[in-house]
Structures are given as structure tokens and as C-alpha cells.
Length: 379
Image 1 (cartoon, one colour):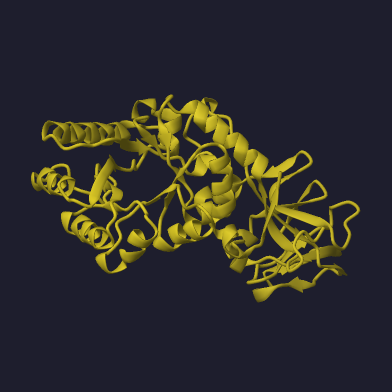
Image 2 (tube, one colour; image 1 turned 90 degrees about the vertical axis):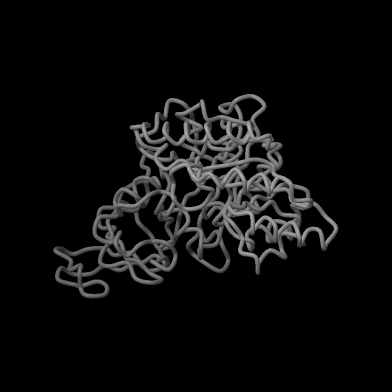
């Protein structure tokens, strides 16, 4: 009860399960393959600093983030020797933190790499980074069909203060049952890499495998793999072959009942009076709402677990509060723990369950819960 002194709602992060998942992933990838663990978006809502500590304890010392701010926070939290890869290009006016904190940028143009090299030269250091290749995701990277791409990358290879650590691309459909397009991307990637080799451009490492490819497309286990959602005990989709890897959920979301009231039939609850009790009912209020990642859309079809029993929402989820119908929950009391995501006894609500109800993906679910709610870490 009341796991955080400031809130009666929280995310619970199971670091034992995280450690287990990391070990499973290390067994799954090809021996000798480096793992760059993707901990962007505050480790998908799980807390990047804590997650990075568990990764480091498992001898994983390369992290992928999305923004400079995420990278700098890790450096300032004591991760001073680890490789921190910023997974998208950084505009020239923002490259100073790359130099200051010895970060590993991703580049998709010669001009960007040259600016980084010049800034590194001014500081008297060498910056190591990666070259992005667009094999079919359509977001960032050199176009493999453009004849000037090889020439630009050759120029990058000759820069005095920027060293190419490797090339990488991203698979658009690796988490789907039909792997046809993923195979096309893999072939494009390999052909382009061969062109680089034939042009005598040094490419120490290749990275293509995301979480889904780590599970289902072992041919993409090159020198680097980049797991993300799997670290957190969530499969990339319902279409991957889950027999390939056993993982455990890391995040649970919980709250305490802060108000409990008996209401007569005909009582309305919440904005818009969307819930009107059809019988004498017991309504519980929990201090969590859509500003905490509990989507308002979840009001009509969502469920929570109270004392091992599923209970529906009663009315619309609001910004900071939600109400649930606990009429059928035995022995319900003020202060009881409510599980929004996670398990209680034999009953479980997963991130996938919530995502399916909301017609979204589990990545969004954990990221949203991770923004405002306090995190309670347990082993």
C-alpha cells in the first residue's frame, strides 16, 4: 500500500525480470555479436538510468537513445565510458554536446559528418559514429540506389576526426508474419555493404536486427544487434514466433483505492454521465488518469484487477482520477491495491491486452505510463 510517499499510483519495475530478459537475449544472439541496447524514451518508460545499470552489470556497454538530452542524462548519471549512440542524425547547430560528452552520432549526409569532424578537430578529439542507410523504412539514411551515396560515404571515411564505426538500417516489417519485405530490406542492406567493401571503405560493423529480427530472422545477426522492446519483457507483436525466446514483463502499473462509496441505482459517475448505475453499486476511485498514461479511450472496454477479480471502469477516465465498479469484488476496502497492468493471483492484464483494446501497440502503452507516474524498483 502507498508505495510512493507522494502518490497512491505508481509503476512497479521488476529488475529481476529485466536481468532475466537480458540474459535470454544474450543467449539468443550469435556468439560474438555486440548488443546495443535501445533505452530511448526513458527505456520505454521503465527508467533509463536503472535499466542501463542492469545492462552494464550484464556486460552490455552500448546504449541506443533518441535524443541528445537522453544521452547527456546518462553521461551525467555516471555512464562515462559506455558507448551511447544517438539513433537519428543531429542537426549541425546541436552537435556541441556530441563533442563535449563523447557521444556516437548517426549521420546520413557528408555535410553533417564533416561538421561533426570539424567540431571534434577543434576540441582535439576523435568522434566515432555510424552511417545510416535507408533500405526501405523511408525515414533517415543514405539512399542505396543513389550512385552518389558511395562517394559521400567515401568522403566521410576520409574525414580526419570522424571514424565510421559501422552502418545500420531499420526493418519496417520484421514483426509481421510475412517476412517478404524484411527479406528485401536485408538483401538491399547486404548489396550496399558489398558496394562499400568493393570501394575499399572500411565498415567495422553492421547493424540491422531489431527485436523482431533477433527472434525471427537470425541471418540479420551481424556484428551488432539492437534489441528494444524485448528487454522489457514484451514481444514486438503477436505475429512473431514466441517459442524463440522466453521473456518476463518488467513493468506493472498499480494504484490504491482512495475513496470507496456505495451508490443507489440511477447514480451517474464522471464527465458526461456516461455511467449510470443500473443497480445499487460500490464505486472505487483511484488516483490515476489520462495524464498518467491511462487513456481516456480505455474507459469503455478497459478492466483493472482488484483482489484477484476483474473490475470495469465506471464512467470516463479523467485527467487525474478514474472510477471503477467494484460491486462484484469480495472484501473490497479503502486502500486496496488495484492492478491496472500486471498480475494479481491468477488474473493478468498485459501491455498487449491494453494495446489491443486501444488499437495501438504495447510500446506506446509503456511509454505513456512512464512519463508521470513514480517508478518503484523491486528485485
